[in-house]
Length: 118
Image (cartoon, rainbow, N blue to C red; front, side):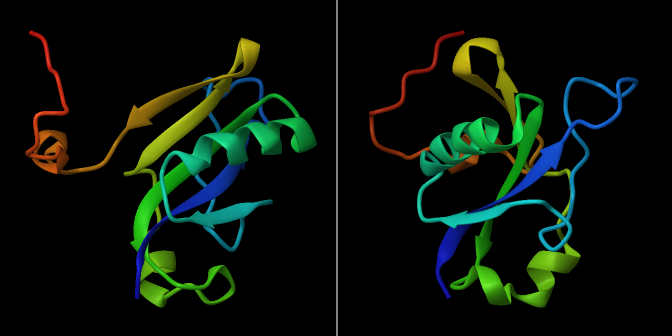
């Protein structure tokens, strides 16, 4: 199996909820995408915004999966809000919040193509 990014569409349906939508499971979401690169998620979310309206949240996680129609059981069972949250913002922007439960710095490449300032 190949590591890919899976994103489920969350829709903001209640005015009393925060500015983001609940995290639906892959089989409960109105739309789901499986892509090779995280950068592709932005274009998909903005297209969903065009199709479904402005108030959207994409919940994305890196998973081992080859086919969106037959997702592994562990991907479905372990799906939850501990992943990336992508919220559509006015002006066509996307805000990314990282809720993954691991050290983000450990995921950075060791090459000198990352600059971090205090």
